[in-house]
Length: 174
Image (cartoon, rainbow, N blue to C red; front, side):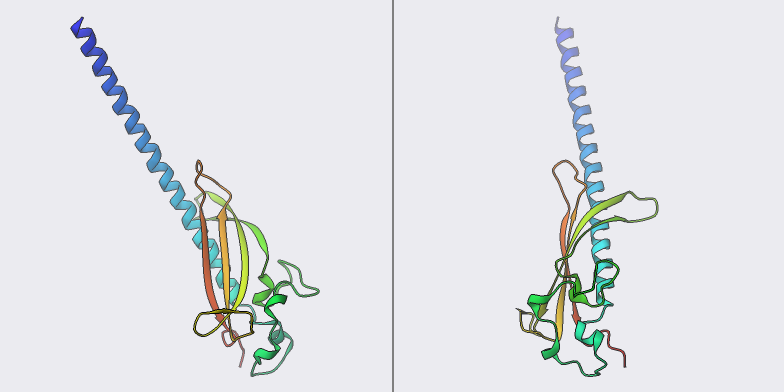
């Protein structure tokens, strides 16, 4: 009888240890997968920001041949978004056209990696040289990309906000 109880006790210890090992292994794999999604999200957001930063600073610069841009002619902050006759993604010519656009993209971190789906929200705002957000046109705009994964690991979801400053002088041609 004592041997049977000892055998059952030993089996319980082995089963508990095996279950804890499996759980630990699953958590490790889950964290690794979440990290892959985080890397893909950051890569996608940075790529989007770099692409945005190559556009003209303002619509007034696109239509004007003036060498010295005048902030008084810049688009009012309340008018940010697609201009008349523009459409996303084919006809976008300045950074504030992206304001208010929401997009779904696929991103992977390498050729052999999984692809992940993300919702990307774009916003643009004027910012002073001291870093304060303003509605008054300035020579700087802050580009903001908020990214959120559509793929979930259990209840976990990857979210992030990435920003980049662009200046009126960044993309002027001499």
